[in-house]
Amino acid sequence: MKTKTEIVSRLKSLIAGELDVNIKLEQIADDAAFFEGGLGIDSIAIVELISLVEEEFGVQFSDDDLVPESFANLGALADLVARRLS
Amino acid sequence: MTGQHKNENVPEITFLQVEPTTRCNFTCGFCCGRHMDQSDQSWEDFEATMEMLPNIRHIEIQGEGEPLLHPRFFEMAAMARARGIKISTISNGSMFSEKRIGEILDTGISAIMVSIESADPSDFRAIRGGKLEIVEKGIANLLAARNGRGSETPTVGFAMTVLKRTRDQLNPIFELYERLGMDGGILCHLLSDMGAYARHYSDEMRGEVLNEMGQALVWARYAKNIRRPEYRESPIRHFWNDLMAMAKDARAKTEDVAPFRTCPWLDHALYVNRKGMASACPNVKDTSRHGFGHVRSDGIGKIMEARAAMREKLHGGEIPFACEGCFIANSIAHTLKKTTSIA
Image (cartoon, rainbow over the protein chains, first blue to last red):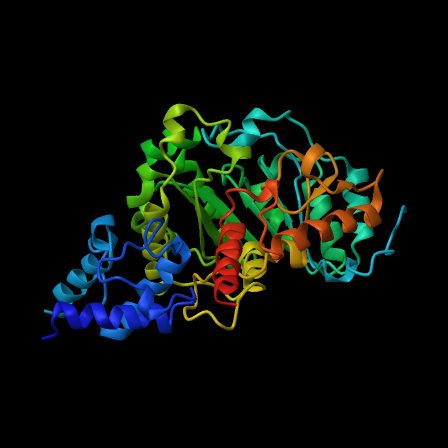
């Protein structure tokens, strides 16, 4: 079982290392929002991130998971990943 | 022909979309074609367009109207076919009579997409003003006739426009696609908030535009659906798929939805509307201000100059006025901004 802190840390590494958005690891706060006012990534990059997260954690999100609340910020996405891992 | 082949960039145009007509027998509430003058492209403009572009590999005969209503649609297709050009179109699917199905098959059209927003008949009628039952029957008849001839073409798919109220229709539309034995793929467009379209929306329709989060989640659901093993898609793909594949970037980590670094339209394609005005893509409606010129009166030289100027602007990180609100232009600007910020 991974802690939320561990999941957040891996999500940050994914965004900084794999996502094609040129955001540095140290620029990402634990509760960063994805869109304007946060990381400022666009909708196409979010779709790419969802695929990367599923691959990285070996999980599959259902349609019920793909709702705004799950992608409000990094912490919410980490909670979703934790639920799927459990 | 004025300026023919003078511009060295003409050979790069391998994709052409022409708008045969703005006339339509449906009344979709989001269609800007219903607010335009109802007219057909002249044969002279079509012929001139084909003559000035010698390297077209794929043509899309479709604009803001029902293409099959153009009285010379099949002659347009035949002219393209005689040059070995792949032909695509998008239809509302209501006019697949036995005679037209025969003509579609005889002309050798490669790919047909049928527009849809909902697989629910009453929703479909409320949005499009047409009957889903007739569209379904037409698709079934077209596929049966095609299969009866042992032909792989035309492939037949759906072109889906997603509104806020129809975002839960993704799965039912995929189910309908499978039930009808379709194989042309499903295109996913989001209700546009570009000015040229949105200025015609009612207040209610304006409320149907998805915000950025909503767009991302629809795209994600769509990407999941097209990765399902049950999803069948012929390798003979529609114009839109072939053109978007030209923008595929080696740096993208995912297969289906990836950020853009260049505009495939400005790299490889040209759009010519029913008045013979050339522009960057079908989203440019005010061609008197943002068009490249008329195919006969201005000629290819002027058109290519204007096209090169727009491409230079966009690829320099500035969104041209005509491209404001376009998801490709936004993605390019976003990617360039990020790249510039660390340079």
